[in-house]
Image (cartoon, rainbow, N blue to C red; front, side, top):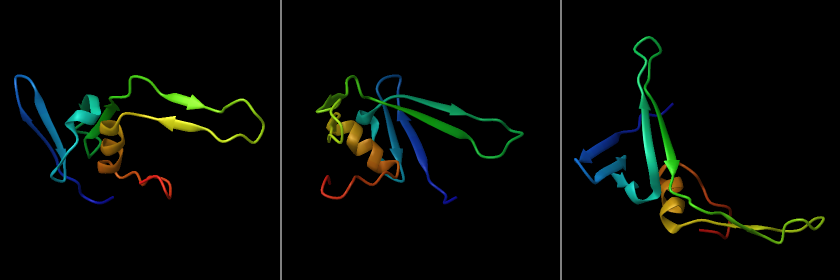
Amino acid sequence: MSKRTLTLSGGPLPHKVTLDGQDFSEGIRRLTIDVDPRNGWPRVEAELAIYAIEVTELGVENSRFEVSMPDEAWAALIVLGWTPPAGEQ
């Protein structure tokens, strides 16, 4: 596992959240940090700011479908290490 740096700043509101220097505050709705001193590394869970997902052309055999999400959530996924499908970047 590679070492990543998560930084929380600001307050009382709003807060800024960065991962390895990249701000992804606008792409998340909630961030939870679970620290268990007996189990090593802290666990960080980010809930993306996706309020609705639109799926089109589903329900037909061998159909293609499209999932859309806010640009901020897309950017947050990339900061978290996701690679978009070829041609979708």
